[in-house]
Amino acid sequence: MTIRQQIIARVTSIEDPVILNEILAVITAESDLEVPHAFTAQERSAVNAGLKDLNEGRFFTHEQAVQMVSRWLNEQSAGR
Image (cartoon, rainbow, N blue to C red; front, side):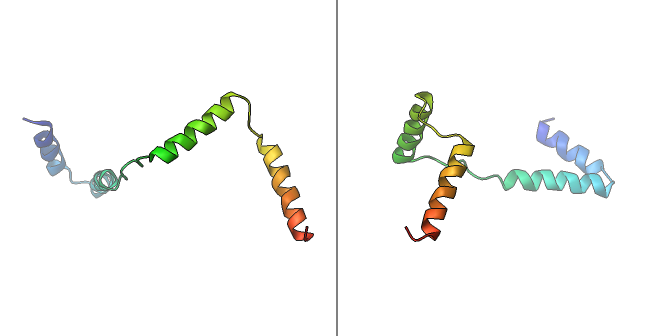
């Protein structure tokens, strides 16, 4: 008996609607899985450049980025 046949036989014998709904949810979720994104050459290049920057210490912390954005927003609202 194949795995598919074993599953069918087992599911056929289940009477509990809660279990059947859970099985249906799992089967439905499996079919709803998205195909993984395939990066373009340009995207791969940008990611690799970012990783190189990171490895070479060229990055900002979250706090630094928040401060930079805050300063920029203040400048924009002041009309500079």
